[in-house]
Image: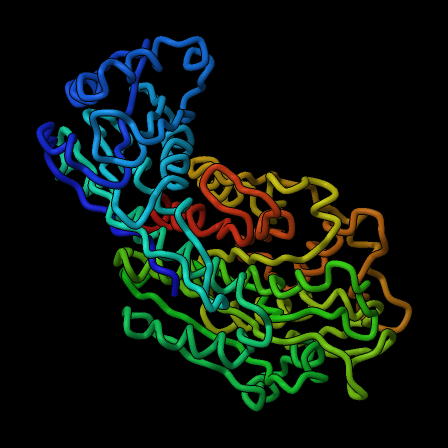
Length: 488
């Protein structure tokens, strides 16, 4: 997998600034005040730093923004990155500043003069996340980025704070790699193999094959993938870091490619359907993060891996399938396949693990993009308290999420003439009726949240901490949910 840049923490040594190669970065707080390291940079650059900070252009900089001086006089470095970050900066502002630094990282290494910055760990995380570069399919690889050395007033404290965040960065990178991979590389078998490899981190990983799924009655899931030469699978990942309490469960949609089936998608943009396994990617990244930081909680992650394609034996509009729960589903649109995968995995999760709560994630509906764009994921829930914890965790990590309504009037749109339900409820409120479909497979006593990440899993332009492409949205939020609500 793509590895985050190496980041280390050290006591401040102003004598090392002049000879540092690559990039030197300095943090400027309120009112342009220069700390000891910044004053040394200013003296070495013959007042260039002070002139920048006193300029009209700098006065308009918001927290988290900055400027770059190329080939600064008096320094061996190729770049001087100046970051505006007040002492009371928010988490998002600190990570945004780190993201700006991440864009400037090069193979010669980086020296970050953090001084007494309170959120230096978040600056480091932002730099690591923004420095991501997926080059697995390029013959010419990107130059490896040199180590980031952070000089801080309290390096031991900064390193301790950064350690779990950098574990999360590895989880985010794992998710991004999975989502960015083309479907001819990330087959269902390859996906399962990569998850099985995480047993080396202490996870218990079990792969359920098609024969197993058939015996369990997962006919809705199997119907989605029956036209593909790739075998459908369910992968179960267990992290047992807590006591005897029931686990929290994460469930992910893993459609490694989605043609739409017989209800074929338009050709334009279909290449992006390599990311239709984004929910499974997030679950995988979270489980990796929990294992890397040795989370003191019991968590299970389950992903349904299928390919939705076209062949003579593909399921048809009008077919009726029976779910593991026993409910029958009239398939109106074969492009509404993700919910057929999730409904069986959700039911299996409850039957086997009796979880304390379930969060499922899926790139489920294009309607979600119309509703919320690319800044917020849509959240649906049957439990206000559980949903509140999730939304708080997402807000704390700066990952946009917005709760949408549910109700009987939406559920009524799923009524079928010949079966227990249809798999779509028409164009009105398409994301909500998709959530209502899943709700039918969640037991009343199980707190549940469904997150539609269709708009946030992949970006066509850079964000503050993610280059264009797969974002890894959700890994940080779900890791925070575990950390704040389930660790002993």
